View 1 (cartoon, rainbow, N blue to C red):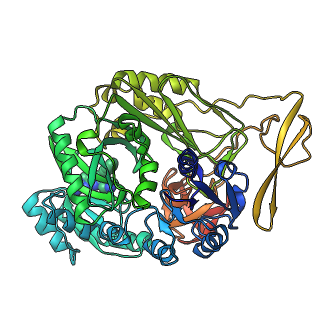
View 2: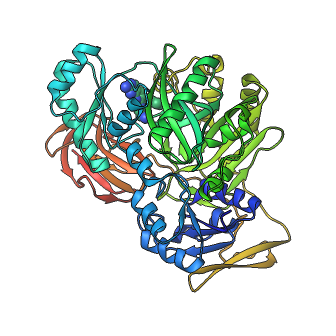
View 3: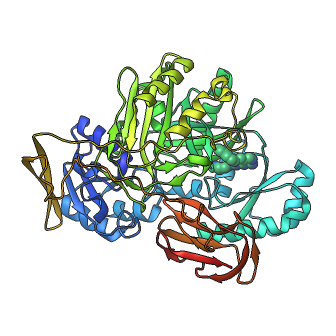
Length: 584
Ligand code: MV4
């Protein structure tokens, strides 16, 4: 078995990996940015090392800093979690060359699946159909039209090096093909550094059903059942479940066998997910995710398997100790994501800040995978996933009701969360019936009536409390426990039990006073500017797109008028309150 794992990640997934390591007696090493000095993953790890920086690029994506920690701590392996280095073959190869095990698939498998054209070809080679489409890069818009004339409109133009829906363009008429291809290629180049795009028939009401696989290095690949992730908004999953509702068992077995073939076709080893679109009883290969996924716990709850344990065992060279016939799915599991976002009015604005209160749910069949506890802060620099709430029950309806009960037990204050939106999803008739598709959240659900988050309560501590004071000695974190009167607030400590400040509002750019100064509500990067000086705009029109906390946010004109100045360009960093455009 592995002896010591460096977890090159943060938040809930770092915590998730640390937990299994502890159960298996494997030592854990955390790394942390300046902002995460006292984060939960750091508190739970056996050792923790500063890698400096605030943004992900300066910290969790800083290869040299992580290699320096590897040298220092003597870990024999690295778990990348998801995001960050999880699908980075340069990183995987670099650590492997140093004799350190990458807990993930071989780099060749990541490369085949990272290019969506080559992944379509790999699947085709294994006899598994993708959505009807062309497995080659588009050279001209005429090819889009020719394809559509044969297979029918609408079609989807997708980035070969993309994924997750970013940059996908749906085209319904031949006239729109040139502009759509050009914009898809430009966005692909901006986001992914490669402009190649390909075309597929566009399915109008598909469900997103993905199959979990596990492959060892001894030639055994098994499927562990599917997850339905159709409840998404702007390609962000909100609710996931297993088994998929109204999903025939013969389709499930065929999809499982297909997922195994696709995995084998790319030489896959470790835990992976094969994504399919499912419509009118048919399924089509979409892409393969070559990492542990956020929603893996729903599979763990219905199969009883610990996927992180198997990731570690497989990386250590162990063979699977069970066969396909041994894999059984029992009951029903549902996961909801608790993101630091304010869904009020359907806007889902990032809501960073300090969690002043976090009452966590418990009781039968309830699991909470959180990256934070009360007192911790959600930074604008990272992913806004605070926690995942996962429930298991004997059947879907019991699981749904159990989830609603668990959500009722949950209180988060200091930040806004998506829990209200999760309730709306879970109680909508289409979800109750299990007849929803990937289009449903955006086309049928109305988040406009969601009330703003409740005002934070004031909590007052009593007597003496333990205060864990953290010091950094030569870059290594050490914790000293002090017992102090609760009122002592001279030291930077945790948990925090002081009167909470009212939550910051983030609506300056959306609900401005009409001064004409369009400001951004939070720190981020401008990725697009839609207006020019002299142009007239209507109130509410999008003037720029801000990327913050891994999300794109439209910045709207707060009044109608002529654009007097444009203060930003794509690529510019901006801070909360910065004026990006002035309207006269
Ligand atoms: C599609 C599609 C319809 N037809 N491809 C979006 C995410 C990326 N993984 C692929 N996506 C889609 N590809 C064809 N040919 C619809 C989507 C899609 C989607 C897929 C899965 C889950 C949610 C989605 C939401 C909108 C669109």
